[in-house]
Image (cartoon, rainbow, N blue to C red; front, top):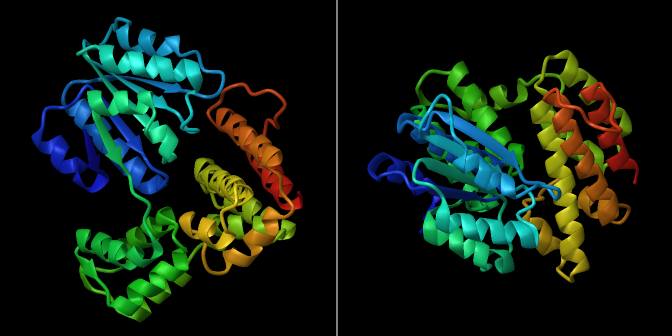
Length: 339
């Protein structure tokens, strides 16, 4: 069955856990929260051991069955997590997922993490098999017009509120990035007690940021501001910023450019494609100009380097990459800005 992300916690609190869950969507924060909710419920239900599989283009799909059926020294119940960032399993993967949907063992809870699927993929046999077997959690794209209400609802969770013009101000500042919005909302909870927030309080909080803002990297990339890229990355490193967040920000910008390139090449107007991918405000013009100088193969190569960098950050070996992950990240961002 299919449920919306906002109904997931009610489902997990009342229903017996399904054998299989799919979380699909491009809103990183909402997808992460949905995945975490499922993991927490699984641990509470006794699924103590977890195996994570990263299904890239060279993934051996036989590992999925092996992971679910292999014995455990520590727990009779286990959780298997499959991350398919491309949303395209290929022929072998599609067949493996279809088979698995009908034969997943009862003592295993499976979580499959996907991006938002195109209509053809969503209507494929493997996707239908997963939905028929388990619970498909749809993570919707949050449109700009909905963002102030979303911010207001998040403030209510921490017993705070703000006037409409203040919510609009916050929405403009984060430019559709929910992770940035989450960061600002969390900061307000630390700075101010429960209750109504004034515009001046929120403005002071938003402008009182670290000298180097990780969410400024995408703008610097599309504007080809290489000096700003290097200063920002060096500053983030010096301030102790977590590398995975900076890597995610750069990777998401590359994915956005690649999707825009693909959509506009297929005949979709840039304005429409940009709106669908939440490219707004000051980023709009610079992003359109950037599309004229980048190619799909080049962007795909840079994304592959991001995947390699993720391995380096986790202490795993990676061929043809700088051993210093921050230098590798800087080189990726600089390469994206010069193409």
